[in-house]
Length: 381
Ligand code: PMP
Ligand code: GLN
Image 1: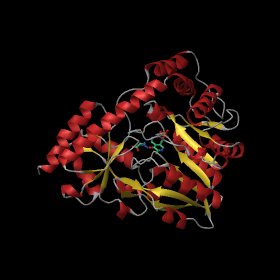
Image 2: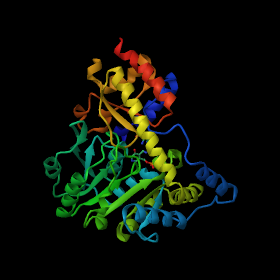
Image 3: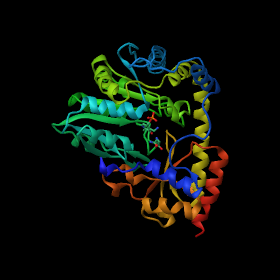
Image 4: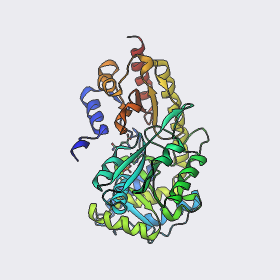
Protein backbone atom coordinates (compact mmCIF):
# COMPACT_ATOMS: atom_id res chain seq x y z
CA UNK A 1 0.00 0.00 0.00
CA UNK A 2 3.05 2.28 0.00
CA UNK A 3 2.04 4.08 -3.18
CA UNK A 4 -1.13 5.32 -1.47
CA UNK A 5 0.61 7.46 1.15
CA UNK A 6 -1.73 9.90 2.88
CA UNK A 7 -5.11 10.74 1.31
CA UNK A 8 -5.28 14.06 -0.47
CA UNK A 9 -8.20 15.04 1.81
CA UNK A 10 -6.15 14.58 4.97
CA UNK A 11 -3.19 16.37 3.39
CA UNK A 12 -5.22 19.36 2.26
CA UNK A 13 -7.20 19.67 5.50
CA UNK A 14 -3.91 19.64 7.42
CA UNK A 15 -2.64 22.36 5.08
CA UNK A 16 -5.75 24.45 5.83
CA UNK A 17 -5.31 23.98 9.58
CA UNK A 18 -1.60 24.83 9.38
CA UNK A 19 -2.06 27.98 7.30
CA UNK A 20 -5.42 29.15 8.62
CA UNK A 21 -6.76 29.08 5.03
CA UNK A 22 -10.44 28.57 4.21
CA UNK A 23 -10.94 24.86 3.57
CA UNK A 24 -12.85 24.31 0.34
CA UNK A 25 -10.93 21.06 -0.09
CA UNK A 26 -12.31 18.11 1.88
CA UNK A 27 -16.06 17.79 1.34
CA UNK A 28 -17.77 18.16 4.68
CA UNK A 29 -20.49 20.63 5.65
CA UNK A 30 -19.84 23.28 8.30
CA UNK A 31 -23.38 23.11 9.67
CA UNK A 32 -25.18 20.26 11.44
CA UNK A 33 -27.85 17.82 10.31
CA UNK A 34 -31.48 17.80 11.49
CA UNK A 35 -31.62 18.66 15.23
CA UNK A 36 -34.07 15.87 16.06
CA UNK A 37 -31.67 13.34 14.51
CA UNK A 38 -28.83 14.67 16.67
CA UNK A 39 -31.07 14.43 19.74
CA UNK A 40 -31.88 10.80 18.91
CA UNK A 41 -28.19 9.91 18.90
CA UNK A 42 -27.59 11.69 22.20
CA UNK A 43 -30.64 10.00 23.71
CA UNK A 44 -29.47 6.61 22.47
CA UNK A 45 -26.14 7.05 24.25
CA UNK A 46 -27.81 8.37 27.41
CA UNK A 47 -30.31 5.52 27.25
CA UNK A 48 -27.62 2.83 27.27
CA UNK A 49 -27.36 1.85 23.61
CA UNK A 50 -23.62 1.46 23.93
CA UNK A 51 -22.81 -2.20 23.25
CA UNK A 52 -22.26 -4.14 20.01
CA UNK A 53 -25.26 -4.07 17.74
CA UNK A 54 -25.96 -7.13 15.53
CA UNK A 55 -23.41 -7.73 12.73
CA UNK A 56 -25.74 -6.95 9.82
CA UNK A 57 -26.86 -3.72 11.53
CA UNK A 58 -29.72 -2.74 13.84
CA UNK A 59 -33.05 -4.07 12.56
CA UNK A 60 -34.69 -0.63 12.68
CA UNK A 61 -32.05 0.90 10.42
CA UNK A 62 -32.18 -2.01 7.97
CA UNK A 63 -35.96 -1.65 7.90
CA UNK A 64 -35.75 2.12 7.37
CA UNK A 65 -33.23 1.69 4.54
CA UNK A 66 -35.47 -0.87 2.84
CA UNK A 67 -38.52 1.43 3.17
CA UNK A 68 -36.56 4.36 1.79
CA UNK A 69 -35.33 2.37 -1.25
CA UNK A 70 -38.89 1.26 -1.94
CA UNK A 71 -40.51 4.67 -1.57
CA UNK A 72 -37.87 6.56 -3.53
CA UNK A 73 -36.92 4.14 -6.23
CA UNK A 74 -39.49 1.34 -6.18
CA UNK A 75 -36.69 -1.10 -5.30
CA UNK A 76 -37.69 -3.83 -2.88
CA UNK A 77 -34.99 -5.21 -0.55
CA UNK A 78 -35.57 -7.59 2.32
CA UNK A 79 -34.20 -5.94 5.47
CA UNK A 80 -33.25 -9.43 6.67
CA UNK A 81 -30.63 -10.62 4.23
CA UNK A 82 -30.53 -7.91 1.57
CA UNK A 83 -29.49 -4.89 3.65
CA UNK A 84 -26.19 -4.58 5.50
CA UNK A 85 -25.15 -1.62 7.65
CA UNK A 86 -21.50 -0.59 7.24
CA UNK A 87 -19.04 1.92 8.66
CA UNK A 88 -19.79 4.50 5.99
CA UNK A 89 -19.81 3.96 2.25
CA UNK A 90 -16.03 3.61 2.42
CA UNK A 91 -16.23 0.32 4.28
CA UNK A 92 -19.09 -0.79 2.05
CA UNK A 93 -16.99 -0.27 -1.09
CA UNK A 94 -13.89 -1.92 0.37
CA UNK A 95 -15.77 -4.90 1.77
CA UNK A 96 -17.62 -5.37 -1.52
CA UNK A 97 -14.48 -5.29 -3.65
CA UNK A 98 -12.67 -7.61 -1.22
CA UNK A 99 -15.61 -10.00 -1.14
CA UNK A 100 -16.27 -10.20 -4.87
CA UNK A 101 -12.90 -9.78 -6.59
CA UNK A 102 -10.13 -12.36 -6.73
CA UNK A 103 -6.49 -11.43 -7.23
CA UNK A 104 -6.02 -10.49 -10.87
CA UNK A 105 -9.67 -9.69 -11.53
CA UNK A 106 -10.22 -6.38 -13.25
CA UNK A 107 -12.51 -3.63 -12.02
CA UNK A 108 -13.66 -0.80 -14.29
CA UNK A 109 -13.59 2.67 -12.74
CA UNK A 110 -14.44 6.02 -14.24
CA UNK A 111 -11.55 8.39 -13.75
CA UNK A 112 -11.24 10.77 -12.01
CA UNK A 113 -12.40 8.35 -9.28
CA UNK A 114 -12.92 8.66 -5.53
CA UNK A 115 -9.57 7.82 -3.95
CA UNK A 116 -10.66 4.88 -1.81
CA UNK A 117 -11.62 2.86 -4.91
CA UNK A 118 -8.02 2.48 -6.02
CA UNK A 119 -6.99 1.44 -2.52
CA UNK A 120 -9.85 -1.07 -2.18
CA UNK A 121 -8.99 -2.63 -5.53
CA UNK A 122 -5.32 -2.84 -4.54
CA UNK A 123 -6.20 -4.44 -1.18
CA UNK A 124 -8.08 -7.15 -3.07
CA UNK A 125 -5.08 -7.73 -5.36
CA UNK A 126 -7.36 -6.79 -8.24
CA UNK A 127 -6.52 -4.48 -11.13
CA UNK A 128 -8.26 -1.24 -11.99
CA UNK A 129 -9.13 -0.39 -15.57
CA UNK A 130 -9.79 3.33 -15.89
CA UNK A 131 -12.32 4.78 -18.30
CA UNK A 132 -11.96 8.54 -18.71
CA UNK A 133 -14.62 11.10 -17.99
CA UNK A 134 -13.83 14.12 -20.14
CA UNK A 135 -15.46 17.53 -20.31
CA UNK A 136 -17.93 17.54 -23.20
CA UNK A 137 -20.33 20.49 -23.51
CA UNK A 138 -19.61 21.64 -19.98
CA UNK A 139 -19.98 18.30 -18.19
CA UNK A 140 -17.70 15.33 -17.63
CA UNK A 141 -18.88 12.30 -19.62
CA UNK A 142 -17.54 8.97 -20.88
CA UNK A 143 -17.29 7.64 -24.40
CA UNK A 144 -19.39 4.44 -24.59
CA UNK A 145 -16.92 2.92 -27.07
CA UNK A 146 -14.06 3.51 -24.67
CA UNK A 147 -16.07 1.89 -21.89
CA UNK A 148 -16.81 -1.12 -24.06
CA UNK A 149 -13.16 -1.41 -25.09
CA UNK A 150 -12.06 -1.52 -21.45
CA UNK A 151 -13.85 -4.84 -20.83
CA UNK A 152 -11.67 -7.95 -21.04
CA UNK A 153 -11.85 -11.61 -20.06
CA UNK A 154 -10.81 -10.84 -16.46
CA UNK A 155 -13.29 -7.99 -15.94
CA UNK A 156 -15.33 -8.82 -12.88
CA UNK A 157 -17.02 -5.60 -11.80
CA UNK A 158 -17.64 -1.96 -12.56
CA UNK A 159 -17.66 0.77 -9.93
CA UNK A 160 -20.26 3.38 -10.74
CA UNK A 161 -20.39 6.59 -8.73
CA UNK A 162 -23.28 8.87 -9.61
CA UNK A 163 -23.72 11.67 -8.63
CA UNK A 164 -20.00 11.65 -9.26
CA UNK A 165 -17.24 12.91 -7.01
CA UNK A 166 -15.07 14.79 -7.98
CA UNK A 167 -16.74 16.00 -11.23
CA UNK A 168 -20.33 16.67 -10.12
CA UNK A 169 -21.66 14.70 -13.09
CA UNK A 170 -24.97 12.88 -12.66
CA UNK A 171 -25.16 10.05 -15.18
CA UNK A 172 -28.10 10.29 -17.57
CA UNK A 173 -30.52 7.46 -18.25
CA UNK A 174 -28.75 6.83 -21.55
CA UNK A 175 -25.37 6.61 -19.88
CA UNK A 176 -26.73 4.25 -17.22
CA UNK A 177 -28.45 2.14 -19.87
CA UNK A 178 -25.12 1.75 -21.68
CA UNK A 179 -23.49 0.60 -18.42
CA UNK A 180 -26.38 -1.76 -17.69
CA UNK A 181 -26.19 -3.31 -21.17
CA UNK A 182 -22.46 -3.90 -20.79
CA UNK A 183 -22.90 -5.51 -17.35
CA UNK A 184 -25.41 -7.96 -18.74
CA UNK A 185 -23.50 -8.72 -21.89
CA UNK A 186 -20.30 -9.52 -19.96
CA UNK A 187 -21.83 -10.79 -16.72
CA UNK A 188 -20.31 -7.99 -14.61
CA UNK A 189 -21.22 -7.00 -11.09
CA UNK A 190 -22.08 -3.33 -10.66
CA UNK A 191 -20.94 -1.68 -7.44
CA UNK A 192 -22.76 1.63 -7.18
CA UNK A 193 -21.67 4.43 -4.88
CA UNK A 194 -24.72 6.64 -4.45
CA UNK A 195 -23.72 8.71 -1.42
CA UNK A 196 -24.84 11.93 -3.16
CA UNK A 197 -28.17 10.40 -4.24
CA UNK A 198 -30.20 13.30 -2.82
CA UNK A 199 -27.83 16.10 -3.77
CA UNK A 200 -28.77 16.90 -7.37
CA UNK A 201 -29.70 20.27 -8.85
CA UNK A 202 -31.51 21.99 -11.74
CA UNK A 203 -34.24 19.33 -11.74
CA UNK A 204 -31.73 16.57 -12.55
CA UNK A 205 -32.77 13.34 -10.82
CA UNK A 206 -30.52 10.55 -9.61
CA UNK A 207 -31.51 7.17 -11.05
CA UNK A 208 -30.08 4.06 -9.36
CA UNK A 209 -28.50 1.60 -11.78
CA UNK A 210 -30.34 -1.20 -9.94
CA UNK A 211 -33.66 0.11 -11.32
CA UNK A 212 -32.68 -0.86 -14.88
CA UNK A 213 -34.08 -4.16 -16.13
CA UNK A 214 -31.92 -7.11 -15.10
CA UNK A 215 -29.67 -4.97 -12.90
CA UNK A 216 -31.01 -5.44 -9.37
CA UNK A 217 -29.74 -9.02 -9.32
CA UNK A 218 -26.17 -7.99 -10.20
CA UNK A 219 -25.85 -4.69 -8.36
CA UNK A 220 -24.40 -3.91 -4.95
CA UNK A 221 -26.03 -0.59 -4.16
CA UNK A 222 -24.18 1.54 -1.64
CA UNK A 223 -25.10 4.73 0.16
CA UNK A 224 -24.51 6.48 3.46
CA UNK A 225 -25.95 9.02 5.88
CA UNK A 226 -22.94 11.33 5.76
CA UNK A 227 -23.97 13.56 2.86
CA UNK A 228 -27.74 13.12 3.07
CA UNK A 229 -27.92 14.26 6.69
CA UNK A 230 -24.76 16.41 6.96
CA UNK A 231 -23.19 13.94 9.37
CA UNK A 232 -19.98 12.87 7.63
CA UNK A 233 -18.40 12.07 11.01
CA UNK A 234 -21.01 9.46 11.81
CA UNK A 235 -19.66 7.00 9.24
CA UNK A 236 -22.92 5.13 8.86
CA UNK A 237 -23.53 3.52 5.49
CA UNK A 238 -25.31 0.57 3.93
CA UNK A 239 -25.30 -2.00 1.20
CA UNK A 240 -28.42 -3.26 -0.57
CA UNK A 241 -27.98 -6.33 -2.76
CA UNK A 242 -29.43 -9.79 -3.44
CA UNK A 243 -28.86 -12.33 -0.62
CA UNK A 244 -25.76 -14.08 -2.05
CA UNK A 245 -23.95 -10.80 -2.65
CA UNK A 246 -24.97 -9.33 0.71
CA UNK A 247 -23.79 -12.47 2.50
CA UNK A 248 -20.44 -12.30 0.71
CA UNK A 249 -19.97 -8.63 1.64
CA UNK A 250 -20.97 -9.30 5.23
CA UNK A 251 -18.51 -12.15 5.53
CA UNK A 252 -15.73 -9.66 4.80
CA UNK A 253 -17.25 -6.77 6.72
CA UNK A 254 -17.42 -8.82 9.93
CA UNK A 255 -13.62 -9.04 9.96
CA UNK A 256 -13.02 -5.41 9.04
CA UNK A 257 -15.15 -3.87 11.78
CA UNK A 258 -17.57 -6.61 12.86
CA UNK A 259 -20.37 -4.06 13.20
CA UNK A 260 -21.09 -0.33 12.91
CA UNK A 261 -21.63 1.99 15.91
CA UNK A 262 -25.02 1.65 17.54
CA UNK A 263 -26.16 5.18 18.51
CA UNK A 264 -25.88 6.57 14.98
CA UNK A 265 -27.85 3.70 13.57
CA UNK A 266 -31.04 4.48 15.48
CA UNK A 267 -30.65 8.20 14.76
CA UNK A 268 -30.18 7.59 11.04
CA UNK A 269 -33.16 5.22 11.00
CA UNK A 270 -35.22 8.03 12.47
CA UNK A 271 -33.88 10.53 9.92
CA UNK A 272 -34.61 8.29 6.93
CA UNK A 273 -38.19 8.03 8.11
CA UNK A 274 -38.86 11.58 9.28
CA UNK A 275 -36.33 14.06 7.93
CA UNK A 276 -36.62 13.89 4.16
CA UNK A 277 -38.17 17.38 4.10
CA UNK A 278 -35.00 18.57 5.80
CA UNK A 279 -33.02 16.87 3.02
CA UNK A 280 -35.14 18.61 0.36
CA UNK A 281 -34.32 21.95 2.00
CA UNK A 282 -30.63 21.01 2.12
CA UNK A 283 -30.72 20.30 -1.59
CA UNK A 284 -32.25 23.72 -2.36
CA UNK A 285 -29.69 25.33 -0.11
CA UNK A 286 -26.78 23.55 -1.74
CA UNK A 287 -28.04 24.47 -5.18
CA UNK A 288 -27.88 28.16 -4.20
CA UNK A 289 -24.43 27.65 -2.67
CA UNK A 290 -23.25 26.03 -5.86
CA UNK A 291 -24.36 29.11 -7.83
CA UNK A 292 -22.77 31.40 -5.28
CA UNK A 293 -19.39 29.68 -5.43
CA UNK A 294 -19.51 29.32 -9.24
CA UNK A 295 -20.08 33.05 -9.52
CA UNK A 296 -17.14 33.82 -7.23
CA UNK A 297 -14.86 31.43 -9.08
CA UNK A 298 -15.85 32.84 -12.48
CA UNK A 299 -15.28 36.39 -11.24
CA UNK A 300 -11.84 35.33 -9.99
CA UNK A 301 -10.99 34.16 -13.50
CA UNK A 302 -11.33 30.37 -13.31
CA UNK A 303 -12.92 28.35 -16.08
CA UNK A 304 -15.93 26.89 -14.23
CA UNK A 305 -17.92 23.74 -15.01
CA UNK A 306 -21.48 23.50 -13.74
CA UNK A 307 -22.07 20.38 -11.62
CA UNK A 308 -25.52 18.75 -11.57
CA UNK A 309 -24.90 17.09 -8.23
CA UNK A 310 -22.56 16.57 -5.21
CA UNK A 311 -20.74 19.21 -3.13
CA UNK A 312 -18.13 20.07 -5.77
CA UNK A 313 -17.29 22.43 -8.62
CA UNK A 314 -14.53 21.66 -11.11
CA UNK A 315 -12.48 24.57 -12.35
CA UNK A 316 -9.91 25.00 -15.10
CA UNK A 317 -6.92 26.96 -13.79
CA UNK A 318 -5.37 27.74 -17.17
CA UNK A 319 -7.21 31.05 -17.70
CA UNK A 320 -5.41 32.26 -14.55
CA UNK A 321 -2.04 31.36 -16.01
CA UNK A 322 -1.50 28.10 -14.10
CA UNK A 323 -1.00 24.67 -15.63
CA UNK A 324 -0.56 22.18 -12.80
CA UNK A 325 -3.25 21.64 -10.17
CA UNK A 326 -0.93 20.09 -7.59
CA UNK A 327 1.51 23.01 -7.68
CA UNK A 328 -1.42 25.43 -7.73
CA UNK A 329 -3.24 23.97 -4.71
CA UNK A 330 -0.01 23.80 -2.69
CA UNK A 331 0.54 27.50 -3.35
CA UNK A 332 -3.06 28.56 -2.98
CA UNK A 333 -3.06 29.11 0.82
CA UNK A 334 -0.21 31.58 0.37
CA UNK A 335 -1.59 33.15 -2.80
CA UNK A 336 -5.16 33.54 -1.60
CA UNK A 337 -5.75 31.91 1.80
CA UNK A 338 -7.90 29.11 0.37
CA UNK A 339 -7.46 25.32 0.15
CA UNK A 340 -8.78 23.22 -2.76
CA UNK A 341 -8.18 19.73 -4.15
CA UNK A 342 -6.09 19.00 -7.27
CA UNK A 343 -8.25 16.79 -9.49
CA UNK A 344 -5.30 15.00 -11.10
CA UNK A 345 -4.72 12.87 -7.99
CA UNK A 346 -7.92 10.96 -8.86
CA UNK A 347 -6.57 9.69 -12.18
CA UNK A 348 -4.41 6.79 -13.32
CA UNK A 349 -3.56 9.11 -16.22
CA UNK A 350 -3.04 12.41 -14.39
CA UNK A 351 -2.36 14.23 -17.65
CA UNK A 352 -6.12 14.16 -18.29
CA UNK A 353 -6.79 16.18 -15.16
CA UNK A 354 -3.65 18.25 -14.70
CA UNK A 355 -5.36 21.65 -15.07
CA UNK A 356 -8.49 20.91 -13.03
CA UNK A 357 -9.00 21.88 -9.39
CA UNK A 358 -12.01 20.96 -7.21
CA UNK A 359 -13.69 23.40 -4.82
CA UNK A 360 -16.35 22.36 -2.27
CA UNK A 361 -19.46 24.52 -1.77
CA UNK A 362 -20.98 22.72 1.26
CA UNK A 363 -20.08 25.72 3.43
CA UNK A 364 -21.88 28.65 5.07
CA UNK A 365 -22.58 31.55 2.68
CA UNK A 366 -20.21 33.87 4.53
CA UNK A 367 -17.41 31.32 4.16
CA UNK A 368 -18.06 31.02 0.41
CA UNK A 369 -18.17 34.81 0.07
CA UNK A 370 -14.92 35.28 1.98
CA UNK A 371 -13.24 32.61 -0.17
CA UNK A 372 -14.51 34.34 -3.32
CA UNK A 373 -13.16 37.69 -2.11
CA UNK A 374 -9.77 36.14 -1.42
CA UNK A 375 -9.66 34.25 -4.72
CA UNK A 376 -10.41 37.47 -6.62
CA UNK A 377 -6.84 38.49 -5.74
CA UNK A 378 -5.55 35.77 -8.10
CA UNK A 379 -6.76 37.63 -11.17
CA UNK A 380 -5.06 40.83 -9.98
CA UNK A 381 -1.61 39.33 -9.62
N1 PMP B 1 -17.94 7.78 -1.94
C1 PMP B 1 -17.85 9.03 -2.37
C2 PMP B 1 -18.05 9.33 -3.80
C3 PMP B 1 -17.59 10.07 -1.46
O1 PMP B 1 -17.49 11.32 -1.87
C4 PMP B 1 -17.39 9.74 -0.11
C5 PMP B 1 -17.03 10.81 0.87
N2 PMP B 1 -18.14 11.18 1.51
C6 PMP B 1 -17.52 8.42 0.28
C7 PMP B 1 -17.77 7.46 -0.65
C8 PMP B 1 -17.32 8.00 1.71
O2 PMP B 1 -18.50 7.99 2.38
P1 PMP B 1 -18.55 7.64 3.96
O3 PMP B 1 -18.06 8.84 4.68
O4 PMP B 1 -19.95 7.30 4.22
O5 PMP B 1 -17.62 6.49 4.15
N1 GLN C 1 -15.70 12.57 0.43
C1 GLN C 1 -14.92 13.69 0.88
C2 GLN C 1 -14.42 14.47 -0.33
O1 GLN C 1 -14.46 14.01 -1.43
C3 GLN C 1 -13.72 13.32 1.67
C4 GLN C 1 -13.78 12.15 2.56
C5 GLN C 1 -12.43 11.85 3.11
O2 GLN C 1 -11.77 12.71 3.65
N2 GLN C 1 -12.01 10.64 2.97
O3 GLN C 1 -13.98 15.56 -0.13
